[in-house]
Image 1 (cartoon, rainbow, N blue to C red):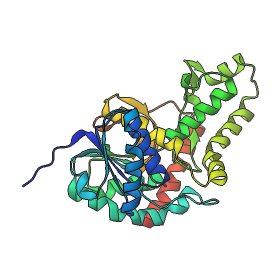
Image 2 (image 1 turned 30 degrees about the vertical axis):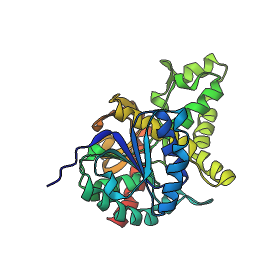
Image 3 (image 1 turned 180 degrees about the vertical axis):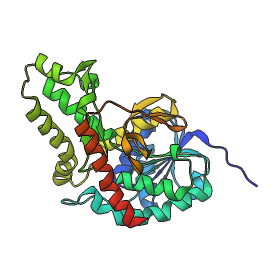
Image 4 (image 1 turned 120 degrees about the vertical axis):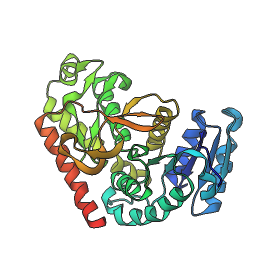
Length: 317
């Protein structure tokens, strides 16, 4: 019997649409991997993207980039899944659910038959539903199946807070939690700027109408994707950078705390659903979910977000 040993320098990207190709490009630039296989239902699309990205290699690190099929993922250590129908203008992420769950029910068994040791990073939307789907039907350990979740939403929040406060967004520490979608929550209770509580830092910068500002920033974050989709039909650069960041945490075993979407079992009273709560991410996947400080209102909103997702899951499983 042939045993495939995972190559921790090999990554597979399944789905070569806007998000998949942008993610592949960001991964190539990262220098994290020495080999990347691109897989798509349209083989020509995968080959074209592989060629296009490969032509930039003289300006980056040596890497083998090629189009392949599911047999080529057997020794990959990380499989990034972006395949799925795209979000159309006026369509919520949850509108995509039945189409993309159907796609995953065909993709995940193909992966599981060839590779039982990789980490599955789910990026396609609705990411929480698809992360649950992948964890449920793959048979993988739950720690090895997680989604990009609200990593991008949290980056959008940090960016907007940095603009609002006129401070480097890298010094803003704040999380979006819950669903990657309309029921997401800003965890204001645990937000700070270099250790200074967010409300105190706002006053230092001359902002005193906290409630109005916080509500507006939260809405702007939630509507960011809709605004971009309306203007340019799709979002892909931000999520590609988020994928690269998660890959860094995995490959370098950074133990970084990132708000990825993972299976929940009891924290904040949430059970048997995948959603985003900050977690320690390293070479083995999600090591531990981190229980950040939430007030009663935020905890209630988080449980409501979980119920929103569970209602959909109950119709599917």
